Length: 375
Image (cartoon, rainbow, N blue to C red; front, side, top):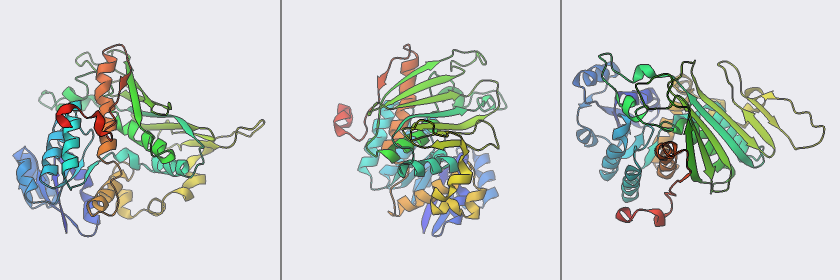
């Protein structure tokens, strides 16, 4: 039996998924607020209850780190040092030094580290990934991801105190929450070429218009240049007055193009074909024609997946994490991808405050790039 503990109430989103998996039991919950701890644990029937993360680790085999963002790196490192598997909420770290510390912890541990980037498990994202893998896009060379989600109500408590989001998401400039957009597109490029990696980023912003109480630009654009020269454009907006559009993606390849839906209830559109004179280039709705290319578990998802959050993504995140813990498959977003995607967010602050200068993104797979104190 794989005993799982959840730290932070955001992690309860995975509870139903874990309970639907054989040989898995959520045995403990941790929250620093005793009232929240008792309320949530009682509501979900979780017996083990802890206000200290270190105490939680003594009673589980694996932990979901769903605490505030600034706690992710230290708690993940602590869990790995204790030999506990880690599923961390996004983003993995808040500084580059934390990235290297977390890499050290992961390399020293026999436990699994995975980042819970659930947007990589959206049905449309999974389908495009399969079409890329099958070569139907030819060579992809440009991708886009956007996260437009006005969440100002999350920035302060009902009493008016700033939350962690007020500090770590909109309390600084840059693409501070970009992995939901970057992760899926990077997995598309990796499906075409597993050796592909991020080389540089640059970031620009619109300035502050909607909420002068925070330094975060209303809209940020981050350009991600890959080692091969291919390009990804990421747009982040967590302040503008507008309806939500948290999951727009696009991909251009030599043999085809995908444009995600811009409005709820509309399908994404796709065109595949050779570049021939007189070709009939008409958009086609993505799901109706290409669902047969989905992996079997997406063609006939279990009821638990259909009921899970983020379009079923939360279920598949939990399932794949359990498989990784058991050594059945590598994590979908392991330590190196988690750090590369997170490092883009971190470096974007330096870029945007210096006129959008391009900055090198560390190759966390290359030991020669480690700072001396981590080598």
